[in-house]
Length: 436
Image 1: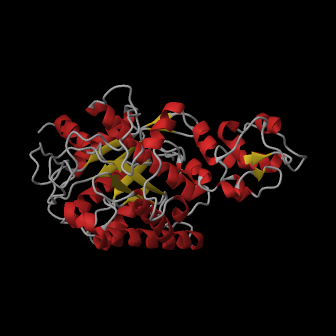
Image 2: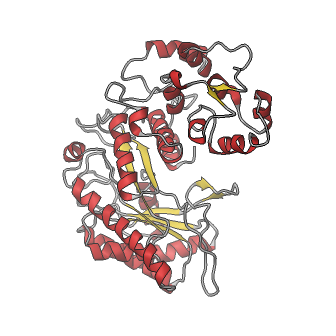
Image 3: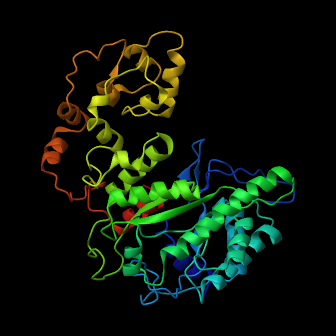
């Protein structure tokens, strides 16, 4: 098989993996090396300076000994198979870099023969890139659950970021849809990577030339919508993963039906893109806004409101805590006001040191009041002309048409479309890869 045929097959097979970002590591170009890695990151995204950046996102192979029902590459599926040799993939990466197509590599793989053999092939590829081609750019590698610990450790010394996909939110779902996988096999390498990163951090302080182990940390990905697992279950699992394994990111991938199976959603089911979006918003609240998963959802409310973001939904359900006085409220409470983000809260703290702030003053320092005005007092007064009740605030935060729909919404609302037409498969793939 020609090399470009392999690339076509294996790059297409990798598009369903959303867990690929390079934020968190910086390494400048060195004499005798090619490539560099910046904090802005690589992978169909935008850097801090506004650049659109990309990586070669590809599988080592789409051949797999597992038969996960949700996966297009499962062994029982009739698809074209291909396998890169380590030399082919290393050479391809370097040629793409030299042509300025990419700035780094995202490498995952199906399970060829067994997990340890697959991991060995990935290690050989990265060793060629780092040691023979002296490639100093960003590399994100997927750890293979079930591989030998020594191989996982060796992979971490070659890659900038590692990830282990947890795939499905519960052992019950794994047993049903991915019988060859287990929660233990997935969490064990996660724990090993966390341990090695912690050990490496200490060793770097003590020994100047200690090689770095996965300096950009580790991440994981969950598939959303393939199983009945609720947002409540997913969010609580997310919080536990952040606390126990110190993950940099948890990625959520809306399930796009690619297989017909009685245990999966119908093949014509639309991917739950809005649900994915709400989970990302809630994830942000957990990481940067001091929220706990139990505050956003509970046993009685296990799904996010499709019409307002999780922060607005929380505020509307806790109107007894509002309005807050902008000139006295602590930073932690300002962060809980809808429409006020980290930068706006910091500007408020800095500005009020010089004197009291009015609503006009908030506008001057860049605070957007469209949502925040319903939850703030300035010098003891509400914004002029506002009538604040949970119902009126909800009505103001969403359009009249959406508000009427909210009154009719059931426990399982119909997925709202993000397109002004029925999306094509290409549109859906772009959503999953961050291009839309």
